Image (cartoon, rainbow, N blue to C red; front, side, top):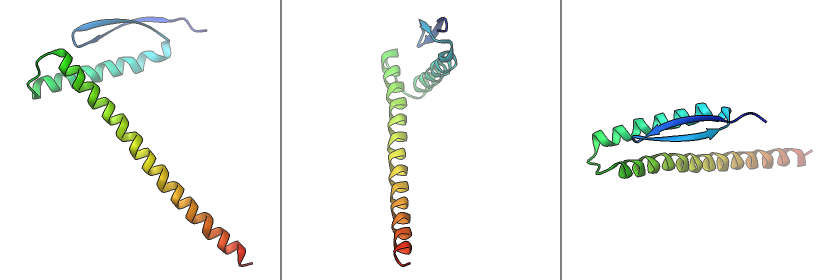
Length: 98
């Protein structure tokens, strides 16, 4: 079992100490950086009252992206299934003529 790594991430002017698997470090640091960048963008472009509002807007932005990807993936899967079903029917029709 790999040893745990202790890191500190800064998000919205707060430091969060975490104990993680070393394999998680890069992803967590990138996520924290993305949150910081989006939070700054919201603060610059909108009249935001406090950090809580900024973080809620960030959470909504990231969650909506995840949900949209899920919807798109389901649509892609549905299209693939429809095409495979049509192909299967075509093959079965050709095979039954022999």
